[in-house]
Length: 148
Image (cartoon, rainbow, N blue to C red; front, side, top):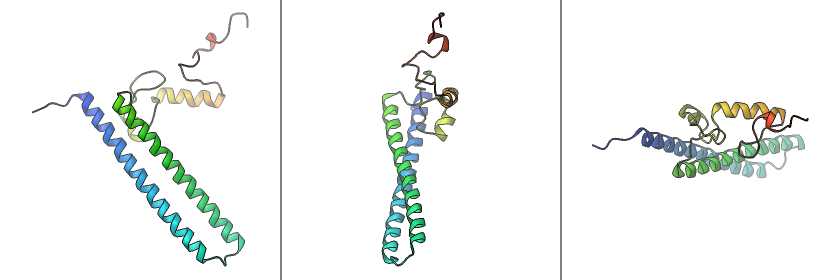
């Protein structure tokens, strides 16, 4: 009997997770597109609607299209994560190089930062001063000289 190493088990778990999420998102996009098509046909037959009704319908259609577009972007991120998985870099924080916990990847399968780095990113992004580690120094005192 062949034993599965913890690394191979994690790899398989992550691959299954990504594929399941991708399948779910694609089903959601397909369903949404089908609903949009049905609504377009219905609206064509209800041309006698007054302007406020059409405005509301158009707004709802726009919102649904935005949601569908966001799901499509998530599919693209999952595809990128699958490529990283094949390369062996999936699940590794792009900021600190540490492992991204499986629990986080279960919730956000296309996460590229660990929880700590993500929180720091959100904190300093709100302040407007964060750059990825490879691009700029990460400590404030590295930005300034003693003369400033």
